Every structure is written in structure tokens, then in C-alpha cells.
Image 1: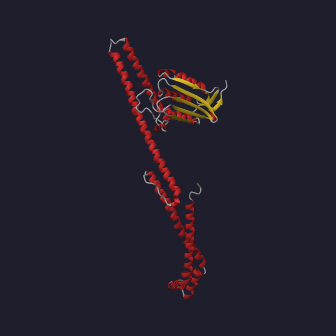
Image 2 (image 1 turned 60 degrees about the horizontal axis):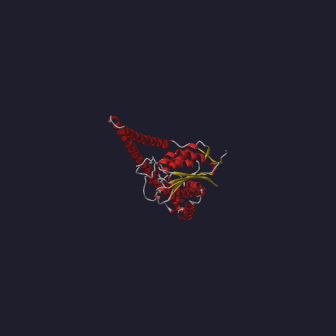
Image 3 (image 1 turned 30 degrees about the horizontal axis):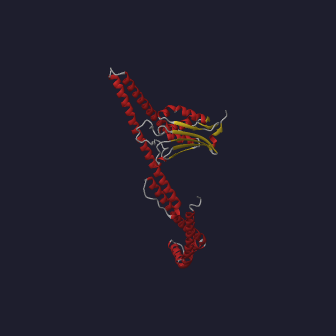
Length: 380
């Protein structure tokens, strides 16, 4: 990086030496050809004649010429040579100033969002590359910001629609219960069950709104403790048992005994809870979910694998983005705000780890890696 502007430095140095040489040659020519040559006698006569016009005698006029000019010839020549050098040095600086003006114009083009590529002289090639990189980065960030804003706007539309749908159903069924005095007990139970189910869905959606607000307004802060990882996974599976029964799912646990990790238990439970819910939501009916906790040299791997419809390859890169959902139609209860995986990724990265996903026709597998600094042996 230090030699990026070597060409520019050498060019400026070369210009300075060239201008210094030109100044020296030009000074020598002026001295020999004009001052000591064709202009010496005319100049002397001019000075003497001027003094005589001013009232001095010829002898006094000659004496003035000798004292002022002839005796101080070296001093006057030195001053003149210095002035000549300053003039040429100023010319050299003007070239540097042009460089600065070109850079300033390029920066203005970036600010004005000019679409054209920035082109600078060859000696400013490193600056040209950096400015074009800045321009490209700003453009990418602008596109990403617009996409994020669009996803957020879409999310608000989806949630508004989903809020309206269960609310309409709740009002409808409660109105039937209120208006129909002679309704049978069977229908009453059915309508109440539907209304409660829709109310639960409405509560979930409202919680998602609060989740979005919390996610956008505060950073996640970790409170680390020692966590029995196998025990945590067993507890999460137990909590998901009712959801798994609805789809007749089985769980295969491949756990390592007596291993703990250092981390925020609530936050990591949230990560694995979200991954397990995703696995349940997108698993085929009567299939199996495999949960594996394994020690490796670098740390710990936690894998959650399910059999279900594969995730399209073009969607894998964006699956951990905020407000991203595979089910864009949001037609099922499994659809959330699209924050779960984004928050999970942030929590894992705050623990120094990584989260990734692999999907094919046979299975979809999420892998959470926590580095060795999070791993400790569990003591009974």
C-alpha cells in the first residue's frame, strides 16, 4: 500500500528537477546573453542618464550605478535566481493542485450519484480504484437498503392482512354465538374452539410486531453461564412434543454426554427453539427429525436435520436476512415475521460461532457451530 503512489511521487519529483534545471539554464542564459551581454552597456547608460535627469552630475550618476548595481551584482543575481525558482516551483504546485481538483470532482460525482465510472490520470490509478470501489460499495448499500425497506413494507402488509383475517373470524363466530340463541351445544363448542384458535393466532401476530420493534431498537446483550447442552436439547424436544404429534413426527437424538458450553442460555435456547420449530413446520408428515450434538477439535456442532420440501438454492443465501420468509404467501400458521433465523444468526455470531444451512431433495439441515472457547466439560 505504501508504494501505491510511487508513480505520482516520481512524476512530481521529476517535474521539480526539470523545472529547477530549466530555471538554472534560463538564469544562465539571462546572465550571459543579456545582463553580461547585449544589455549590460544599454542598462548602464540608462541608469546614468536617469540619474543625470534627476540632477546628479555624470560622476555622481556613475558612482550610483557602481554602488547600487555593479558592486551588488551577485546579490541581485541571487535574488533574481531565487524568484525564478519560486515561479517554476509554483508551476509545479499548480500541477499537484490539478490532481486535487480532479479528485474533488470525482468525489462530487460520487455524492451526486453519477453513474459513470471515475477515470483519473495514470499516476492517480490507486485513488481511481479506491473511489470506484467506494462508489460501488455505496451503490450496493443503497440497493440493500431499498431491498430491506421493501421487505419490511411487504411484511407490514402481510401482517396487517393476517391481523385482519383472524380478527374477522373472531368477530364473526362471536356474533353467531351472540345472535343465535337456540344454537346447539355442539355448534357452540365448535365456534368457541375456532374463535380461540383465531385469537391465539392473533396473539402470535401481535407478539411478532413487538419482536420486530425489539429487534430494531436494541442490540442483543449476552449473559453467559455454563449450559448443559444435551439437557437443553432434550428439554426443547419435550416442549415441542405437542406440535410433533400433530404431524406424527419422530425425533432421533444423537447427543454427547457430559458436555457443556459457555453462553447465554436464554438466547441459545431461542436459537435452537427456532430451528426446531422450522424443522417441524416444514417436515413431511410422519417423517423423522434428527438432532445431533458432536464435539470437534474447533468446538461443538449442533445439527438439526429434517425431511421436507427442499429450500430452493437461490433462496439459501437470503434465508438469514431480516424479514425473509420462504412462505411468501403466508397462508399457514407456520409463517412468522421472518425474524427468527436473522436473530438466530446474530446470537450465534455474538457467541463467536457460525450458522449455515444445507438443503437437497432428501433433507434440509441447519448446523450451528460454537468455537472451542464456548466449550467446557460438564461436571456431574
